[in-house]
Amino acid sequence: MFKSFVATSIALAALAVPAMAQSAANPDGVWKDQWGTTFTFKTCGDGTQLCGTLNDVQGNSRTPENLAFVNSQVVTAAQTADNKWEGQIAMGGGTAKAIVEQVDANTLTITGCRAAILCQTLTYERVS
Image (cartoon, rainbow, N blue to C red; front, side, top):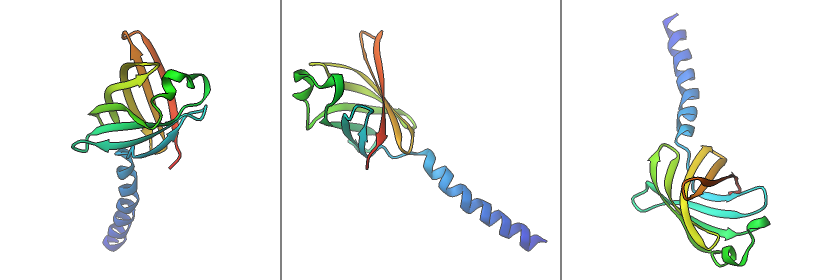
């Protein structure tokens, strides 16, 4: 009986480890929105900051102002909670407050706000 209990406990613990590991999602990789705009995000600085490079701009955001930022780091943010970073994003020829949240292993959102009331949230899916 005890042997069966130990075996069951070990099996359950083995199943729980991957679930716990997923809670600390890794944002490093290439991310794409529904229009095809892509970013490469990676942890930077001391490992708690997040840096984002704009790879390509598609859709209504494909303006001369935004195209000037292609292949440039446009997001710099400090970690404020698990899977959440707050900082700045360059957009539309200026900068805005940025909140990046990794919802799960393959989804993150970027919320850009100007004047604290003009906010837009975009969802990105992991490409690689």
